[in-house]
Image (tube, rainbow, N blue to C red; front, top):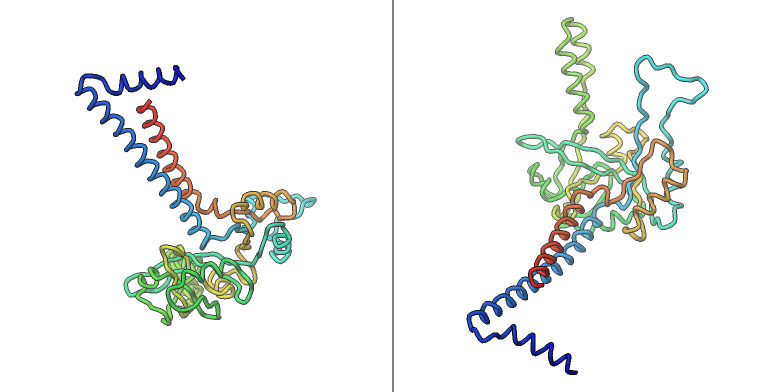
Length: 317
């Protein structure tokens, strides 16, 4: 008891000295530290809540895991293949789909086509990434996207497209309008063909090259508008339309996987890869990988706040 009283006496002795000016400085210092810590704690609490909401927003439009298939690289010039080893070939996605569906923790796995399209506009073409999704199948991603509709419906009927409100505005279109779209690869091939034709000096060969230059744009009806600031910037079309736009024929770009627990995406992706059932021409990307830069920026900001709080505590000490 005597030790406690002595501690209090010393504390008040130095906090309340006889010189009034020093006492004012002491009070200002204490209030400054208290105010600084209090404000920073409030800011950190708000930031923590914003971070949670930010992750929820990303999960509102990002596939939990995306299995992506790549084309085998052609052998270098002059390379002679070993007859004892088979040549690289593109695996059949229909054999991979059951592997994804059977993985524990997976709710759904559906084929998807991903690419960039350009829509004609009054001034210039506007590009946007689109997902080609299979209509009529249970897909939690579609269910989440429907929550961001501001007009129309999330319809994946033939010759339809769902875009964001900002993209529709950029092409001067509204709900129910029809827009003309071109696949990026088709435009590249057309431009390359025109350049080759212009370099040809023989008129007959030049005409033949020009005849081989073609592009088949598609006219799609806007059936739904998504809120861009919460649903991302992508557009969505039926899978068959995306296959036509990206010249995939019967192939796909990848498999979209939805999980019961999105935070378990890295573990489940790792388990799929280590199972040995995924062919060599497939890679896996989680929703954290796809938004890595934005998530890292949020983590860095939070670390900076903790650093500032540490400095204030050191000053107070």
